[in-house]
Image 1 (cartoon, rainbow, N blue to C red):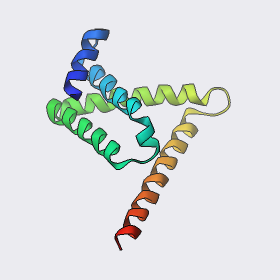
Image 2: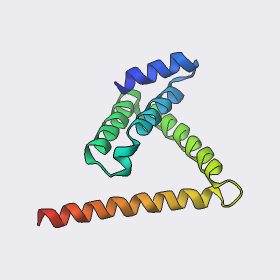
Image 3: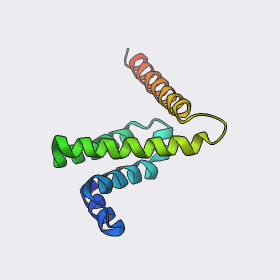
Image 4: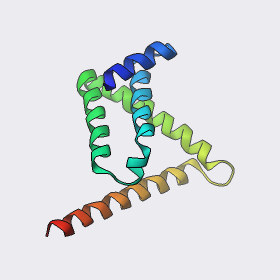
Length: 115
């Protein structure tokens, strides 16, 4: 499905493969943002599977292109979010910190539940 979505994005926007892949994976993230926000494991697993599919289909060079395109998009978005009140680096650092803390909390909850 992710490969089909990438192909559709490339045709729709007349863009190359790495950008089409990035559009497809970002679209999947946006479609599942509620599940991501709630830390829903099946949602995260679906996104992992989609990213893995792209990496396996494109190989190491294509994977590097995808990471580069996504990094640029995140950098631009962090700048937009920061506005005049903060720096993109601070916004990005806070986002990473929040998601790492959430992942650790979920891991600890699962660990405690299994004991």
